[in-house]
Amino acid sequence: MAYDILVQGPMFCDLIFTDLPSMPVLGEEIFAGDFTVTIGGSAIVAVGLQRLGANVGLIADIGNDPLSKLLKTMLHEMDVDTSLIREHPHPLPQVTAALSFPEDRAFVTRFVKPKTPADLRQLFTDHKAKHIHLSSFLGALETPDACRVAHEFGLTVSLDPGWDEEALRDPRLHQMITELDVFLPSESELCYIADTDDVEQALLQTAKTMDKGMIILKQGKHGATAYSETLREHVPALPVSPIDTTGAGDSFDAGFLFQYAQDKPLVDCMKYGAICGALSTTKAGGATSAPTHEEVKEWLSKLPS
Image (cartoon, rainbow, N blue to C red; front, side):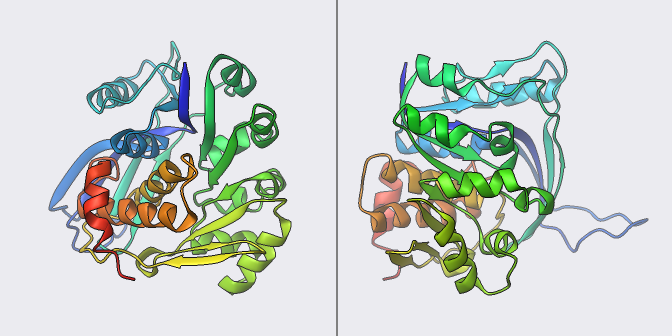
């Protein structure tokens, strides 16, 4: 089967608590005003791409535990292709509890690593694709040769690292960044990788290490900046009233990559990303509020210039 985009990385059952009075304190209890169960991790990108109209394949793992079965059910309900998901005959609980506030959030995650990584070479042999997106350092470090193998088969490669202090300083991740076509970090992730608090210095320093790729820096309410040694482009954020920022970065990735895989102009890719990222914050759960292609086009005129 042929795909426009492959998305690789763990997916999680997201338990999202919103309308919270404050962060909890040890020994005390708080009550959430609302609660949502949805799919998270790599599945947010896959759902976002599918909603936009891309033919997307999700490379992930599930077990035989109740949470895994729930994930599979939700993916089917959202019409996401699950044929590339490996199903294991043992529990593989992958779950995130998110304490979400309008401007930020905190997570507690349980990740169970599969015994063997995905065989990307076999997947690329069996399934043609234009692009592969590595969703989080967890997927990237499982297959550190992903860029080299993908490029051999003619695919472009992107990575959104996610946050983990140890992983962001891992030499394997730094080597992968040099080989990427598109690197999609947040400001805090990029600065931590570059070991500086200066965003401009982090951009310059990281871009110099990349063979041919570009950085798409996600800056939340300040929009996003594309940067390489030969280009710089900025788009503002879409003005919305956020409810839950969980998965906003992954939703940005989906919008950006939908256009990128079609060889659209860079500014169009970034505008799609900005709209998808912003709209994902208007409801609880990034995948829940993923817009369609028609909805994005309606919002294009509302993006500040």
